[in-house]
Length: 299
Length: 249
Image 1 (cartoon, rainbow over the protein chains, first blue to last red):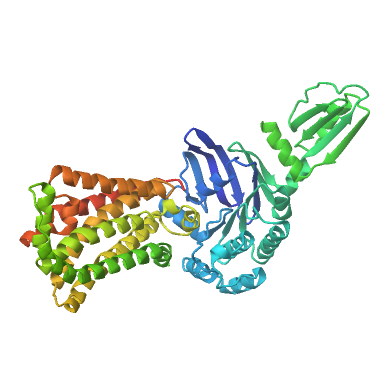
Image 2: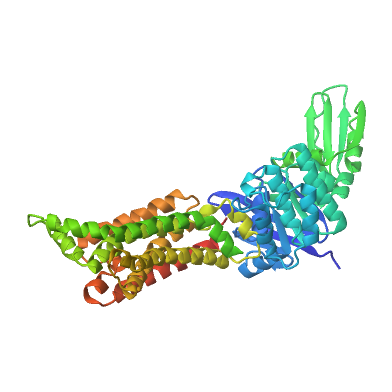
């Protein structure tokens, strides 16, 4: 039996006028995973989230969350009952106080976690009587996270949660998230272009570029399979074409030839040795490099 | 809680409107003794339309009922209610899009979100129409006059039904455009268009329905006009919901 999927899209398309934001996105997020959703600005990350939560309608394809069709009004209400969104936008109600905002949100969720609320209010040093428009961006983000976590949601969707925060505030938000996940395993869909954040907490990664999924899988498996094979020659590097599966990208600079392999690198290494380089080095690559090489290969 | 949020977001428009209309109602009542003193001094000459209108105003003002209808139900109340109906209507969900994202991420249907906002606005409009109008019969004994509460309620009902057209138009525009200014400008353009049509056609139009002129002159309610207003408001409300259901936010 396959793993159960919390988020599943197939051939998902969304156009805004003549702009194609999503061009056939096929995405799968298993239950219980912490999935980092990476992409450049404008790659289609926020559009994907909005489609999943029923805030915008897809132009084509299918999106299901908890097995429910995200494009149907009734189903999307049920999805939002079981999912929580922390958005980068400053969209909390400025006229309300922290306490009013919490009471307002809690009124829609029967399983509201008052114990967690009290703990997070203390941890984030949020004062109940402060009007939201007087809160700094960092405090607003903390409040948005509190509102999301206390719902008892099965799925937590975070859209650039640390955008605009200083490093200390961003770290505090991430730590709060890590603590929460450790205590209560949930499915997390973390959308960001902060690769370090994703690397810190995610166990799966999906990379989107130009509205299409270009890479996905468990972070461990990706880091095991991606290798950088660097060759140095005593002459200009030969313009060879590496054939076969597993060649993500080839870069030639003077006497150096670098091949990025997404298949462990063994096949590439055999071909490389046949070129008689002065030296060959095989090195593992981090998520940052995987991301850059993957999207560079798409350009 | 959704009602409470709507109230928080529109309370200043409503409270300012209520303050303005209450002051206007009180001023209308307390102006009457002065008007009575000045009436014998006014004698319009000429045969033009303006002179005829002034003569008609003088005649109506000789009686308290006529004066209240002329100054309050046909003028001050209509003017201010129209302005605040539009201001309340432009507090729609989409033109307040900075906060729409959070609201729509809650387990709420769009019908409920727009419905509560629309109903809250109509409730405030209802209060804006009736509370200041009721001040008139309550305050009249203070200047030695009386004004019928029944007349007040009937004129108030006509005013409210007419004002819902402007509210619904502004509400519709505020769900079509993402900003506040275009809905406001379009709604006020609609008021100007109605006013021009009113004058050009010399036929009872929406402002005549709002003032309850037929009821004042003949004692009969302007049913066709009222029904047309209800139908127009209902149609615009339905279109608003359809647009909001299918909008990307």
